[in-house]
Length: 595
Image 1: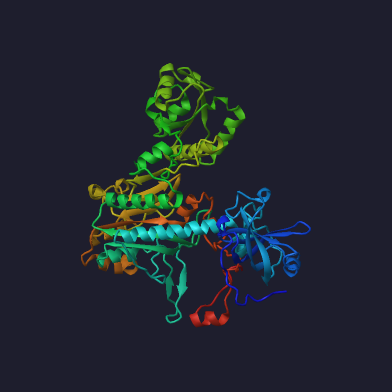
Image 2: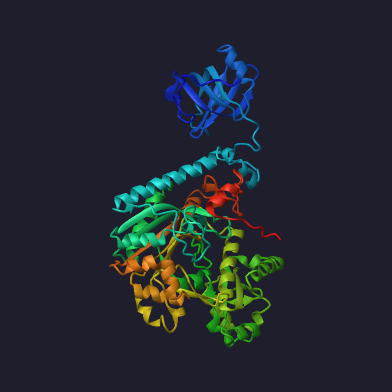
């Protein structure tokens, strides 16, 4: 029987009552978490987002309430009135904040019944993610999921307080904007009033925040939704959230300082952890040559060591040929890895092949010499140099790769991470942050046959490299920077181009002619003609940041209603077909691509 709430009002949450509340008459409301029938007494754990409180139903106190309690099932919604009592010492639960008390129920109202859930509402759930996403309204009742969203909420508040304290202005930018496709595909929105024309959902507020700098708002921020129609993975969603920041009259160092202070605030308030400032800086070239990636995990060592210049005279043909062809020979040291079996080493060789490498060469480190199948081809002098450069110790294992530079460093970067995980070398309790700077401005895309922007088309070249734009654009460095944490990029930004002529030159290098540039970005070029100040900014991947703060593996765990990797919302079925009348109003006709 479903009952009305009537004039009852909740007096306390299910995580609020303590020993100091003994004797109080209270009204609690929530969901049945667990029911235990001990014959005479019935115990119910009542749950809400604040915690759990044990309810006791005694037939001698209220036979009607006790009778109702016999039929309660998990996830029924209850309102219970009763008196706070101290639990007997042998039944207290130190794991619960309310574990010293219980509520002796005098009256019970069943506000709603519930079907048997398809999985248990517990943190130890073993249900497939697809099932949890279909029943997301149940999945979100789990304490860990609620905690994730509460952390997300707290980070929002820290960010807003921080930027307000530092004189930033929060300004909303449009969701319906002009399509300026660069990078990922736009999500398009058809216009009912202008048939055949479309708005685009913003991939980022990039052009708008630059225009706000032209307008004189020298410190802008926004916690903003962005949209990209791209292939998905664990840390991507078609709609995601950014902390978007832009500042005028600044250098890179000014932006680094404000971001580091923000991160220190977030870690202090969310994790009660103090960060060491300032964060270290690595150039892009240093990050690649030492860690094989531009988002290095600094929680463990095993840096890449390059041996190329010491191997041009080796008798080992593969090394010698690689060096002569302009390739690289580099490696990493696995501490005390000498005990690895041949089959284990071979498995890592197969792993290396996934990245284009022919395989790996393994050398065991002994006292001032190397052992292994290729050691006989390496002179004593070369062996000594390899040991010195790699700082290897007896018992270590030196793993080498010889190939094209891009293959060598990408493979060793991936192998370093795999070995770090396999041998538990990564301290998961640490948070290591660093700046990556001096990225190439452009990279050549052989498929498109043109240069593409490493970051985006509005990134300023380094002033000392401007002279190379017309001759060797691939050598130009960008005033761009990424913030990485524990092997993840959590923010990226740049100093922007604020002169029209430089922006036009950038478009030309990207294969965007003057007519196309005017069509796509004329409004921005026009703004640059009216006194645009020097400016720069940064954008945080908010979902990824929260995921790392809560120790998650997927951003879906910190988003209330995420999509699957095929961009489907399993709970409500989006995307769906729409009524033909709606399409007619928009001037749209669908065609089948299956035939």
